[in-house]
Length: 247
Image 1 (cartoon, helix red, strand yellow):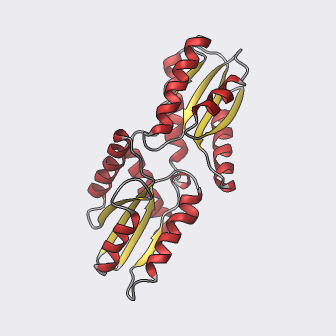
Image 2: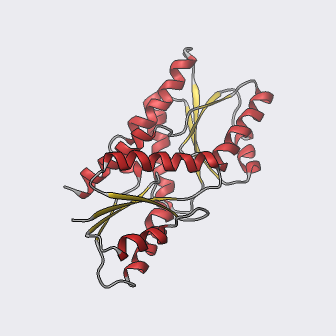
Image 3: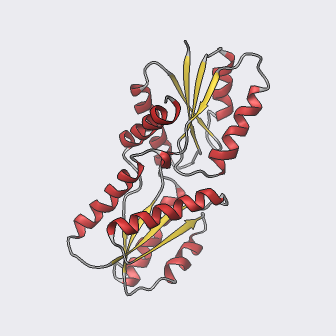
């Protein structure tokens, strides 16, 4: 049986973000040697998701995994990628059996990975005091994704006994983020937790804004790492495949 797996990423112009997605691809190839694994991008970069679907469909694969390398149930996961796949299915008489993996949030170990990033910051701080939590994620209009982000922020705050939590959804406009942070009660220090899978302009903007704010407000903002251990990400994907698709 010819089995394929298509890793679907958003796409970025940032060289670091491109390297991150390629690193995840290489790790996935090593883990799934019985699959032909490809990567496709929604925008900006090539090969596109359409390019790679053409590869799998034209070569008569029997089975194809569609894997969104994305964290939440945003429109890319729930609408855009399925729409591209469904449109392509109309072009071919013989199509593979297709399975979609859910977003990474649905993996049973996702929270554990996020929590480890928070714990590492708290361990380095060493001092016991009250902190607020700010969860940063990419802006979305998808109501389910917004609910997921809020639920995650609430769970992290409760687990670590933060006195305050807030989610901020950011765009490429840094001024909006600056305003959101300026509106906070700066009697507290805040742990900033970016929920990003790959590096890119959003993370770059966040880092620059935090540096600027800390110069003025005496290090009120403490930045956690984004999700940058791609062996862990690969394991999250594998867990989704085993628990959601191969019951």
